Amino acid sequence: MIILVMSMRDVEKIIKGIIKDMNPRFKRKTLRELLSEEKPHVIINGKRHRIKRRELEFLKEIASEDLKIPIVLEVDSSLGGAIKISGKEEVKVISKILGKEIDIFSEKDVMYIYKPELKIVRKELPTTTQLIFKLSLFD
Image (cartoon, rainbow, N blue to C red; front, side):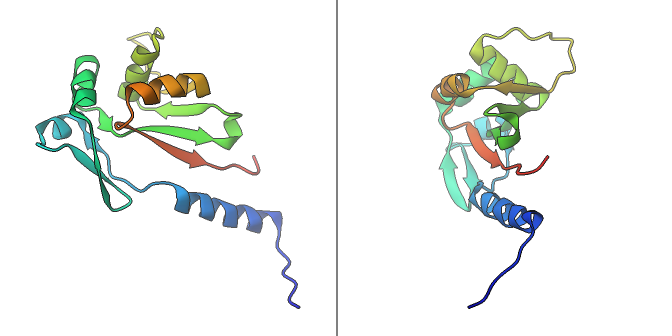
């Protein structure tokens, strides 16, 4: 019998590694790039992920063509169920979809939403958003 003694930090590293492996790997493209493609797509985990043109046209109406797609929705265990959206254009898009007022002169580039709002966002933008998970065992 082998007994393995590990610290909680070691366990945390292992769990973080597992979560990291579960998260998708992708390179984001700009809205401009995707609009110029005949069959818009991004590569996620080495596979082609089609982007619906309807979503791109919708985004074109409410965002800059410099918007990076997919829009990353970060689920962080340390945020108590909140989903973090980062980036000025990304915050602008999600705010518009949810009907939230934002100060156009604000430099705010982070916002937090919750599950009911996540459902609305994912229903509106199923192919142009991507969930990623962040695990925090110790703060």
